[in-house]
Every structure is written in C-alpha cells, then in structure tokens.
Amino acid sequence: MLSFLGLALILLFSFFAYRNYARQRKLNAALQTERSKAIGQKVRAERSEAFKQQFLANMSHEIRTPMNAVSSITDILLNKEPRPDQVGYLEAISKSSATLLYIINDILDLSKIEAGKIDLEVIDFSLSDILNQVKDALAYKAEEKGLSLLIDKPDTVPDVVVGDPYRLTQILVNLGGNAVKFTERGSVELKVENGELKMKDNTVEVKFSIIDTGIGIPQDKLQTLFENFTQVNSSDTRKYGGTGLGLSISKKLIELHGGSISVYSVEGRGSTFSFRISYPVSSVQNLQQRIMQKEKMDGSILDGLRILIVDDNEYNRLVAEESLNLKAKVAISTAVNGQEAINMLKENEYDVILMDIQMPGIDGYEATRYIRDSMRSKVPIIALTASVLRTDLDKCRDAGMNSYIPKPFKAWQLISTIADVTGRKTVAAIPKPESLKKYIRNAENIAVTDMTYLGKFCEDDGVRMKKYITMYIEAVPGFKETIKEGIQNKDVENIALHIHSFKPKWMMMGMNTTRDLAVHIDALCKANNSSVYQQLERLMVQIDKSVDELKDKY
Ligand code: ADP
Image (cartoon, rainbow, N blue to C red; front, side):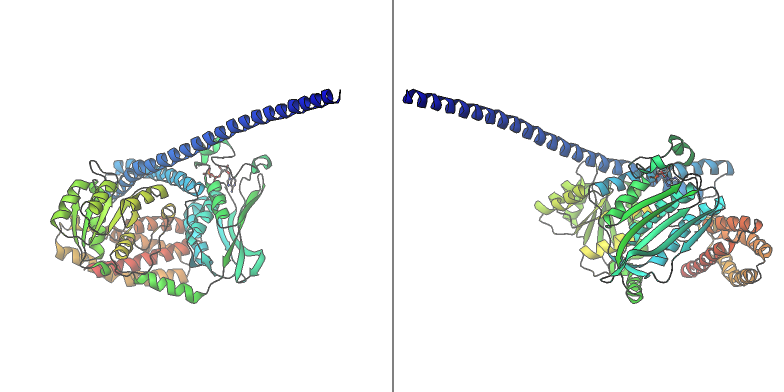
C-alpha cells in the first residue's frame, strides 16, 4: 500500500515537474521570439536611421551646392546694373534660394542635433556683444514693423563667459525672430538676468528672456509647441512662413547646454520665452587675447606652398583658387577628377591636395586610397565636402584623408586647415556656423566696394578710374563732418539732403549695400524715426571701410 502511495506521489511529482518544464520551455520560446523580434526591430530601426542619414547627406550635397551657386550668381547679376524690369525677377530668385537654403539648413541642423553630432565650442565671449549682434540682426525687420527693440542686461550679470557664442546667437535669433514675426505693435525685449543658481564654483546661471507684446499663443497649444514641425495655426505657414522647426531646434540646443526653456503666454497680449544656461565666468583680458590672436591669422603663412585642387565643378575650383590667391602667394594646379589628380601627382610634387568627394569616375575616396596604398604618398589631403555628417567624415579619414573643409567654405577655413595639415603653425580660427551667416550682415570680410561698374564706366582706363577714386576719397572727410554736425543738431532734413547728394558716388564705387542703406536712412529721416542715428553709425563704418579698401587697391 505504502509503495503504491509512494509510486503515486512520484508520478504526481513527475507530472508537475514536467508541466513546469513544458511551461518554462514555452515561456523561453516566447521570450526568444520576442527577443529576436526586438533585435529585428532594432536592426531595422538602425538601418532606417542609417538610410535617413545617408539621404540627408545626399540631400545636403545635391541641394546645398547648386543652391549656393544660384544665390551667388544671382547676387553677381544684381550687382551688374541689370535692366529695371530684370531686377524684380532677380530679386525673386535671390529670395527663393535664400528661403530654400534656410529650410535645408534647419532640417540638417535638426538631424545633426538628434544624432548627437553637434559639438559645442568652448571659447571666451561677451554676452553684451552677442545681444548687440542679435539686436542688429533683428533691427531691420523690427524697424519695418515699427516695433521697439530693447536690450536689458544689468551689470550684475558677468559679461565675459566661456561657451559657444554661435549656438547662443542661433537660439536668441530664433526666439527673437519669432517675437518680431508674431508682434504687430509694441515691443520685443531681450532680457538677461542672473538665474536662481547665481554664482557657484565660478559658474553663473544666466536667465535669458525674450518678451514680446504680440499675438500670444493659446494655452492648449503650449504643450506641443516645442515639437518638430509644430505651428499653432495651419495658416501660419502661409501668413508668416517658417518651418515649425525653430523652437524645437532651440530647445534641443538649450538642452545640449544642460539648460532648460519655458514659455508663458496670454493670447492677444504677448509671450515670454525664457531659458537658462550655466557658463563658467571668464575675464575681459582673456577675451581680448583671443580677438588679437584671431586678427593675427594671415594668409601669408601659406606662402610658397604648391596646392592641387581637385573638383569636377568649375565654380568650386574657381572659388577655392581665387580665395587662396587673394590671401597668399601659392602655386595652384587644378584637376577635374580623381584620375587626373593621380596622373598629375605622378608627374609633380605638391605640398597639399584639396580633394572633392563626389566626382564622376574615380571619386575622392578612391583617389585618396590609391594615393595612399598604391603610390605610398603621404601628401596631406583635405576633403572638400558638402556633407557635415560624422559618418561621411569618418569615411574621409578611413580613406586616408588628413582633414576636411565643409562646403561652401570661407578663405579663413582654407588657410587654417591647410596650415594645420602642412605643419605651418596657425592660431585657432573661429568659425561662424553656416546657419548664422545669413543673419550677420556686412560681415567684416565682405568688401563694401566693387570696381566693376567704375571699370565699365571708364572703359578700364586706369588713369580715369584713379581720378574718380581720388575724388571720392577726398570728398569723404567733408561728408562725414556734415553728417556729424547733423547728428549733433538732430537736423535730419540736412542729413537726408547730403546723403541723397552722395548716392551717385557710392554707385560709382560699386557700394550697393551702402546705397541701399542710404535709401533706408532717407526713409527713416522722412519719418523722423529715431533709429536713424543707429543706421548712420553703420553708414559711417561702411564709408571708413570703403576708404581703407580703395587706398589698399590704388
Ligand atoms: P516657425 O518657423 O513656424 O516660426 P517655430 O518652431 O519657431 O517655427 O515656431 C512654431 C510656432 O510657434 C510658430 O509657427 C507660431 O505659431 C508659434 N510661435 C512661436 N513663437 C511665437 C511668439 N513669440 N508669439 C506667438 N506665436 C509664436
């Protein structure tokens, strides 16, 4: 009986043990399926992310480069005295290409931030300088709408801090630009205060507020405001333009700084966007030292170098060649594809090669690999690339390139990168990011004079040209004196009169920006608008610069 009971118990145990085992197996199998599903999903997500990146890289190359050519060539045509009926068309092309570049840059910026591919600069900068730059960038639009633009920065906030001035400007221009865009009357204020954390370990928390008296935002829209592609009304795009990306880019950039953003808004009354970022405090001496170093950067450090430029695009070759020839005494050769570059390198010696990536036939990667592996040459190679994605830059390095320059490039980028890879010492160059260029008008390296018109007018007769240039240079001191007097006596009528009579001289000297500014000042004088004095300061700066340029040339 006992043994029967024992047997039954063993059987019962075995049954339960088997049932548990079967259940566990089923569970494991289910887990396994889930796991492989998850792995599959992850692989697919990674693949789709890689595809997205590749797509964006291609898009940046395919659209940005020709778009830059369109806008530069349109500007050249606009400066060549087009017929009046052509001006409208050219301006429309110029505006549309600028808008397209703006959208492309926004999308690229967002994807770069999302992929964690933005490195913040760490340099000394002045908060007041940034606020003034942002004010300048917004002034034109604000004046057009009759808005007052105010800056409030008490001395209790340290002025020189360490961080990324370009990204801060980008955030402030985004938020300030929105404030101006969505305000019809009243004011826009950029306010800076000490945050709650104040000073700690020589770090200050700065609270920035952008306060407007505009249309405001409905409460139920505030939650989703910072999401990609969000606009409060679908009619906003038609009425105000924009991509619905500015706020989400700003929020992400602020978070990248370890900061936070918030918004307070009352419909019909206005909005306040506030954000906080902590910066280490620096000193005015440090800042001055950095500025002096930047100014010392001089193209002559490249003198004597033999440079090979490889690019299938004639326009790009010309821009690189001219930028370098203007700044340094270098010997430049050009090739239109990888094969030609290789052939030239077999016959000649170069100190550095600037290599485009996407070319028909042998592209930049392949040519570099050949130069490194088959020719065993160590000549420094710099990639010229429209892509800013890290995956592409890694590919450049893997192929054996030493560095890269993003397209479209500035002369200082060429100089500093070439100096770096050829061992000619240079001080660190300070880039202005792509997305900011459009906001910073009259950048210091853009010439205000252009001799094309005068050359045509004088049939390229140097003696006649010099006569007009001398006349202009000699007329400047008297003109400046009269304007200064006008400013002192607040005599806008007299200012307008003299500016008007000076306009033909600016036309002769090819100073189109100055002429446009003069037209704007004329209108401000007529409206007795007090911002005329600020614009007159800009005018004076341009005139001084024109004299320097003309004395340099002749
Ligand atoms: P957009 O390019 O459309 O300006 P943003 O992301 O910068 O994109 O802004 C998203 C939307 O938020 C805007 O279209 C607008 O509806 C609303 N918005 C942003 N700033 C303001 C503001 N200062 N006042 C009123 N509405 C605003």
